[in-house]
Image 1 (cartoon, rainbow, N blue to C red):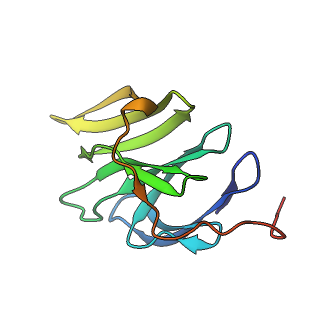
Image 2: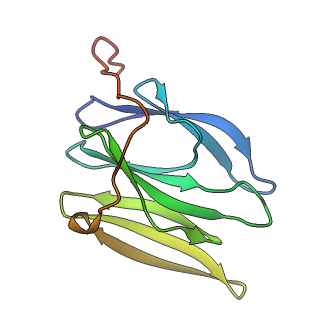
Length: 146
Protein backbone atom coordinates (compact mmCIF):
# COMPACT_ATOMS: atom_id res chain seq x y z
CA UNK A 1 0.00 0.00 0.00
CA UNK A 2 1.50 3.30 -1.10
CA UNK A 3 0.49 6.72 0.24
CA UNK A 4 1.90 10.09 -0.78
CA UNK A 5 2.25 13.41 0.96
CA UNK A 6 0.15 16.26 -0.40
CA UNK A 7 3.19 17.91 -2.01
CA UNK A 8 4.08 14.54 -3.62
CA UNK A 9 7.69 14.73 -2.38
CA UNK A 10 7.28 11.80 0.00
CA UNK A 11 5.69 8.38 -0.25
CA UNK A 12 5.31 5.64 2.31
CA UNK A 13 5.02 2.03 1.28
CA UNK A 14 3.59 -0.41 3.83
CA UNK A 15 5.02 -3.91 3.31
CA UNK A 16 3.10 -6.80 4.89
CA UNK A 17 5.40 -8.27 7.57
CA UNK A 18 3.03 -10.58 9.45
CA UNK A 19 -0.16 -10.84 11.43
CA UNK A 20 -0.94 -11.01 15.13
CA UNK A 21 -2.87 -14.11 16.22
CA UNK A 22 -6.55 -13.11 15.98
CA UNK A 23 -5.42 -9.58 15.20
CA UNK A 24 -4.33 -7.07 12.63
CA UNK A 25 -1.52 -7.11 10.08
CA UNK A 26 1.72 -5.33 10.86
CA UNK A 27 4.08 -3.78 8.35
CA UNK A 28 7.62 -2.83 7.51
CA UNK A 29 7.83 0.66 6.09
CA UNK A 30 9.69 2.24 3.19
CA UNK A 31 9.98 6.01 2.94
CA UNK A 32 10.78 7.07 -0.63
CA UNK A 33 12.08 3.53 -1.29
CA UNK A 34 14.39 3.47 1.78
CA UNK A 35 13.39 1.00 4.49
CA UNK A 36 13.06 2.23 8.06
CA UNK A 37 15.02 -0.64 9.67
CA UNK A 38 14.25 -2.63 12.81
CA UNK A 39 10.74 -1.24 13.29
CA UNK A 40 7.21 -2.43 12.58
CA UNK A 41 4.05 -0.42 12.16
CA UNK A 42 0.31 -0.60 12.07
CA UNK A 43 -1.47 0.95 9.13
CA UNK A 44 -2.66 4.12 10.92
CA UNK A 45 -0.63 7.13 9.81
CA UNK A 46 -1.02 10.78 8.86
CA UNK A 47 0.94 13.32 6.84
CA UNK A 48 0.72 16.95 7.94
CA UNK A 49 -1.05 19.27 5.49
CA UNK A 50 2.24 21.02 4.68
CA UNK A 51 3.93 17.62 4.10
CA UNK A 52 6.60 18.41 6.70
CA UNK A 53 5.66 15.66 9.16
CA UNK A 54 4.59 12.03 9.06
CA UNK A 55 3.06 10.41 12.17
CA UNK A 56 2.95 6.62 12.33
CA UNK A 57 1.57 3.95 14.64
CA UNK A 58 4.70 2.07 15.72
CA UNK A 59 4.33 -1.38 17.25
CA UNK A 60 6.75 -2.34 20.00
CA UNK A 61 5.76 -6.00 20.23
CA UNK A 62 3.98 -8.68 18.25
CA UNK A 63 3.64 -10.90 21.32
CA UNK A 64 -0.04 -11.72 21.70
CA UNK A 65 0.21 -11.98 25.50
CA UNK A 66 2.14 -8.73 26.08
CA UNK A 67 0.54 -6.49 23.50
CA UNK A 68 -0.56 -4.40 22.05
CA UNK A 69 2.16 -1.91 22.94
CA UNK A 70 2.27 1.00 20.51
CA UNK A 71 3.39 4.61 20.26
CA UNK A 72 3.37 7.50 17.83
CA UNK A 73 6.56 7.82 15.80
CA UNK A 74 6.77 11.34 14.39
CA UNK A 75 9.10 12.00 11.45
CA UNK A 76 10.24 15.50 10.49
CA UNK A 77 10.68 14.75 6.78
CA UNK A 78 12.81 17.70 5.59
CA UNK A 79 14.78 17.61 8.86
CA UNK A 80 15.37 13.84 8.46
CA UNK A 81 14.79 13.21 12.16
CA UNK A 82 12.23 11.41 14.31
CA UNK A 83 10.68 11.50 17.76
CA UNK A 84 9.29 8.56 19.73
CA UNK A 85 6.23 9.38 21.83
CA UNK A 86 5.25 7.71 25.10
CA UNK A 87 4.40 4.00 24.94
CA UNK A 88 0.78 2.91 25.25
CA UNK A 89 0.60 -0.51 26.95
CA UNK A 90 -2.39 -2.68 26.08
CA UNK A 91 -3.58 -0.10 23.56
CA UNK A 92 -3.43 1.46 20.15
CA UNK A 93 -2.52 4.96 19.00
CA UNK A 94 -3.95 6.58 15.90
CA UNK A 95 -2.53 9.85 14.51
CA UNK A 96 -5.38 12.25 13.70
CA UNK A 97 -3.83 15.61 12.80
CA UNK A 98 -0.43 17.30 12.62
CA UNK A 99 0.25 21.00 12.23
CA UNK A 100 3.06 23.39 13.19
CA UNK A 101 1.69 23.70 16.72
CA UNK A 102 0.69 20.18 17.76
CA UNK A 103 0.25 16.50 17.04
CA UNK A 104 -3.22 15.15 17.79
CA UNK A 105 -3.73 11.44 18.25
CA UNK A 106 -6.23 9.02 19.69
CA UNK A 107 -5.47 6.34 22.27
CA UNK A 108 -7.64 3.27 22.53
CA UNK A 109 -6.82 0.95 25.39
CA UNK A 110 -8.43 -1.75 27.44
CA UNK A 111 -8.94 -1.57 31.19
CA UNK A 112 -10.91 -4.05 33.29
CA UNK A 113 -12.54 -5.52 30.20
CA UNK A 114 -13.74 -2.19 28.82
CA UNK A 115 -12.47 -0.24 25.83
CA UNK A 116 -11.52 3.35 26.60
CA UNK A 117 -10.71 6.10 24.09
CA UNK A 118 -9.22 9.51 24.46
CA UNK A 119 -7.82 12.24 22.26
CA UNK A 120 -4.45 13.70 23.16
CA UNK A 121 -2.42 16.66 21.95
CA UNK A 122 1.34 17.10 22.09
CA UNK A 123 2.73 20.57 21.53
CA UNK A 124 5.47 20.71 18.90
CA UNK A 125 7.43 22.99 21.25
CA UNK A 126 7.47 20.24 23.91
CA UNK A 127 9.11 17.63 21.66
CA UNK A 128 12.77 17.53 22.63
CA UNK A 129 13.83 13.94 21.93
CA UNK A 130 14.54 14.27 18.19
CA UNK A 131 17.00 11.73 16.75
CA UNK A 132 18.45 11.52 13.24
CA UNK A 133 16.93 9.04 10.81
CA UNK A 134 19.28 6.12 10.04
CA UNK A 135 19.35 7.19 6.36
CA UNK A 136 18.89 10.19 4.12
CA UNK A 137 15.47 10.30 2.47
CA UNK A 138 15.99 9.79 -1.27
CA UNK A 139 14.20 12.28 -3.54
CA UNK A 140 11.27 11.13 -5.66
CA UNK A 141 12.47 13.07 -8.71
CA UNK A 142 11.45 11.20 -11.85
CA UNK A 143 9.53 8.67 -9.77
CA UNK A 144 6.21 10.47 -9.43
CA UNK A 145 3.31 8.06 -9.56
CA UNK A 146 -0.13 9.63 -9.65
